[in-house]
Image (tube, rainbow, N blue to C red; front, side, top):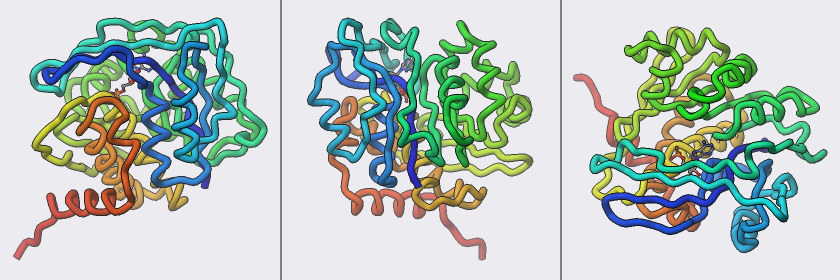
Length: 305
Ligand code: AMP
């Protein structure tokens, strides 16, 4: 089954305890489509960049099977820019600067060939744009998943709540779940958030794994303890790409399959953080993914005698 991803395609400037980068390629949709490309064949992208965005990078997405017909290039505009600094623990970060640029007033066009895509991933971007994309699909997709962040809760909470009513799966981190729900307990937060629209909620807890909630069911997926984490940027998006890419490739949205999908997502996130930016996601092999997933299985399987 094919996948349509919407979200930022960006320039990022990052600072971690291991080093600093000037503008490198980032963006939620970049990480999501690269990660999903290891699972799905029909991998469509709707996003916007400025004339300053390198053509080679668009070529690189295409080399990974990403269809870029829906990537609008505003010749005289500037690409979305984000800069962030990670704390010593690498689990928390501060946003230093966000320049929405061409993303602020993006009016998304969904190409004809994407209109009936069954799996829709609304990656991090302006909530009003996420809603427009759902409304502009010719047919309601089988599964709509959304990722967002604290910035949109701060400046566009009403728009965010409006789009949440239309989605099936929401993925956010623990801090954002607390902000969105006003509850400290993640169990209580999950109840409040699921009442806002999504039947399924994934709460990411960085190096402490992720929780999957649906009605009164909960599943926990660990994160792989890695010896070295260079750059956590894009981990959440790589997770989302692996999760929905796996669901689309198996075309099974049952809770049991979502448990498997969350492990595939966690495996993709674990690769992402091993190098700066998208570097590690670009050259993965199916064999590496298979081995990594097996490490997750080994990490938490045991027998009670
Ligand atoms: P993650 O580390 O998975 O949360 O995602 C990091 C990516 O999100 C970076 O590559 C940024 O370009 C992108 N990003 C940061 N802030 C925003 C925002 N407000 N809207 C959309 N994308 C963003």
